[in-house]
Length: 252
Image (cartoon, rainbow, N blue to C red; front, side):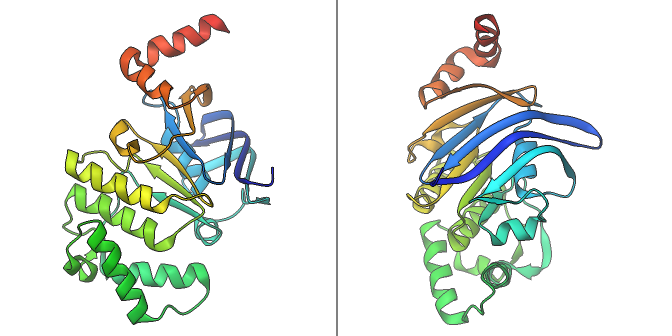
């Protein structure tokens, strides 16, 4: 698949010796938007963390291929250098490191090149303005004292500044009011283009308003139990997971 960015084959993974993902397959191509839905405990966040290489999670079988390269043994920073980015559901506070310094340093690590301060700062300020982030936040310690909405906007700011190949968004819209969700949605839409891809976990379809969703995958018991287009989101909102997955079991 020449246009495949990420290929996940027969993925088995877990945490603390407990298997959570039990043979999951997923292919993500350039330009696509994939939405991951599922009941609590179905493995959604585990999938995101395993793709990103979180050391807490153990991959016990299968393969992760990014642009033809097997990244299954790579550490998180090595995966980031190759174009993966994970926006956390609950971003951590990092005292002592400003937003500006973190993004600039991470950019230098990922590219292997020195990032000149003035052009970088000009781009950072422009992106912050689009996300309605006060310019003073650039000099604040990362996420320290930030509201929930400010933390999520900071994650989207990083997404725009890093411009990864595959963006993994784990409930980036959770805990946000309507206006903040719209700003986050606009930021994700600004990032997405024909050469990258998004994998999104969400319980709020509003974040998808400005995106064309290509595939919706429903996880259950560590596997993709059902797939469809954007219409599947509405079906689940109306009928719930139990009915959708129950109907699937009867068909199978």
